[in-house]
Structure formats: C-alpha cells, structure tokens
Image (cartoon, rainbow, N blue to C red; front, side):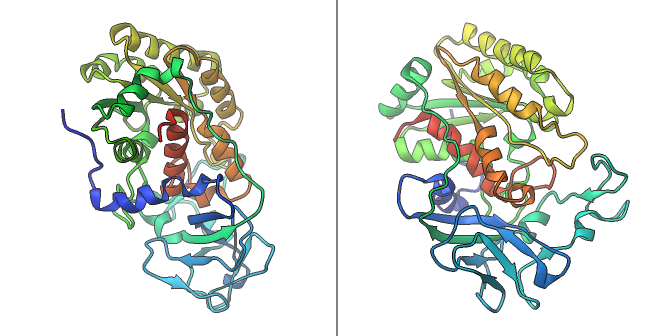
Length: 365
C-alpha cells in the first residue's frame, strides 16, 4: 500500500508550518501567519480588509503568491489598536469594488444566483481569488479565540491512536464532496504556494508528527452528498480503513435535506463501514458555510447539520466541528477572505481550518 504524501511534496513543508498557525492560541503573544485578506471599497483609497486579531505592530502584507512584500505607508495604512487595514490611493495591493463584486449579467466571473435580487455576484474559481487575496503576518496579544474542536476520547479513536503512537502504518479514507477533493486550494489551482487540500494536510501532518506511514485514499467527488456517499461503501471497504473521514453537508444543504435525514444517512454510512470493518474509527466532519448571498446557501442548515453530527458521536465515532470555527472566524472577516471560489469552497487558509479541527480531534502529538 502506497504511503500517502500529497502530489506536490515541495509545497508541504511550508503548508505544515502554517497548519496550526491560524489557531495556535496556546502561546502568547500569538503569531498569525498568512492570514488572507480581500480588500474591497468603492475606490482604491477606500478599500479595506479586516484582520482576525489586533496586531502589536503594522502587519507584514504580501501578495497571494508571496512574491511581493507591500510597504506600510506606501501600499497600506494601519492604526494601532485596530483590526482594519486600508489601502492607499496608489497601492499595489489588489482590491475589488462593489461593481466588481456584483458584475453585470454574463460578465466574466459572474454568477446568476444571488439571493433576493436579479443582480449577479462574483465567482472566482481556480487561481482567481488566490491572485486577488493578500496575506498578512503579525503578532497579537488580544484575547479573542474561536471555538476549538474537542479532542476525541480513547473510546472514540483509541485503536487509531494506538497505531499512531506505535508508529504503525495507518490507512485513512475520505468520503465527501468537492471541498474534500481539495478544489480551489492553491495546489489544484496551480497557484503558489501550491498547498494541497485538507485531507493531504491531515495525512502529511500525522506522518510527520507520529512517524506512521499514512496511506490516504480520497474518494471524494465534486457535487456529491450524503445519499451518494451511502452508495460508496464498497469502495470504502476496498481500502480497509483504520479511519474514515466523512465530510458531507455543503451539497446536502443546497438541496435542503433535513438535519434528521442528513444524520440518518451519515449514521448509516458509518454503521455499514464499521459492521464490515469493526476496527475502523470515524470522524464526522461538519461543513464550512457557503456565501450567504448565494441563493443555494442554507445558513440555518449548516449549524443544524453540525448539531446532528455531534449527536452521533459515540464509541468509535468522533466529531470535528468545522462549522463553529469557520462561523466564528467569518464573523470577524469577509467570507471572500476565506473562500477559494467566492461561493462554497475554502481557500488555503480555509483548508488549514479544516485540517486543524481534524487534528485537534485526533489529538496525537
């Protein structure tokens, strides 16, 4: 069985260094690394973006690919004690106007399905948003922190942890939708720093931290939901997993599946896998939220799905609450700071939020 490392191993050291940076709240002061910013405003001089924390000093801001370092005063301004960064009139940092965020019908990077209006909305898959988003690095001593995913008990993940602690090979299977394929992470978008999606980050982090060869089999397919996942049990069992990462919800919510039905399908997937593979543990991964302007987003369903998945926790089944962390971060930033396509996919930072939550649940040093 082939040990898993992501397809672009040259990008992994930097990605693993960043992996826990967005949420490394144990140390004071906190160092925030490569936090994404999309600057918006009616003019360049009025364009702003909001940092997650209050910096101790002016943040270092770089281009999305890291090739340019922007100059305080020349490209942006920041007031001590503030989380707001403002561009200068002749800033080299990209920005977007309201007209660009809500373009004319049939314009490039325009999407027709904006909630409650006939206007269209910006859609930027691939490397488009990677090139528009800047990245900030800074130190902060403020006291804000998001919800943390709780470590699983040994009743939930004991056999999997035991293999990791013994440095034995482990097999991880991922079953999910386009988010789990890594779509719109920079690696798949052919953009620097070429970070892979969260499943590869989790596998590489476990292999690096624990010394266990990790075979990752990612069965996720774009556009799929939990009902489709139920049809994939034979494919999952082919790989005899030690751990199943089950990560649906985005497309289920767009299809307005009820939380009870979502829970039933998720539970049935896990039960069938564990009946055939009793030593397999599972982590149920709740979804990020979609752009609230998008007509197919379902703001009420994402937290309801998370609660439904949490209720399924028990022997050999743990829960990683990405929804709570994502929502808390989004309350302090723009959705477009965190998204890789503007609608329903995370960017590199968002994929690190996913990976961090899952690794917090696994909780093996």
